[in-house]
Length: 298
Image (cartoon, one colour):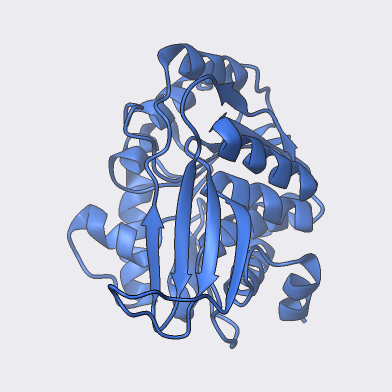
């Protein structure tokens, strides 16, 4: 079973405004409400690709109940922990001349609830996959992903991580199966600009030296590069299309990579499906459907 962790999920209010004017009343042309959060996005894409997963994390209040409803509506399993105080955050994604976001803070996570999540993580068994995605709430220590990996260190659980900064670096000694930084994130780790796939390979090797097994670097419109644990380099170009919504594209890429690898054990196939899934979501309002992913595979 694949388990995804979203510590601070959200209700995402996506609003399209033809031309935004600060200080004035702006009226939307189009709007949508979806369940947001990187781990949830991974679960939704896994579902589209025919693979079951279980979404873990925290929800609270009326927005938490809506997140739970939306996740179930999309056919995903969940074992969210409902907090007794606060409400899950609301994120505003404004589509106008350029994308802008206002992200809420989210509820405070009490220690008892965090302990309950760690207990859930502790039940994972050999052969399971744990996906750790995104930032953490301000009330949770930045060591939380490392602590989860340490809890599973004696088990053969594959860890996939899409995180940045200390969250990612602290995971590396536990040899995650795959990490998926984008080119900006990997550049920030080493204080450099990643401008080419060749640059990405150089610094992906450094992350391997620190413990990562496979390093998948997403490079937006330039595609992606994968440095496998066997030392092989795999590259892919992004399909052509109109970017509608960049939110969730990287999460979809990670989901596609995992499914491609699990189905065929091939890094080429994993990267191919990852690029197709990520691009399909970038060309969609939300997480892409299987049909849209399939069309990009042809």
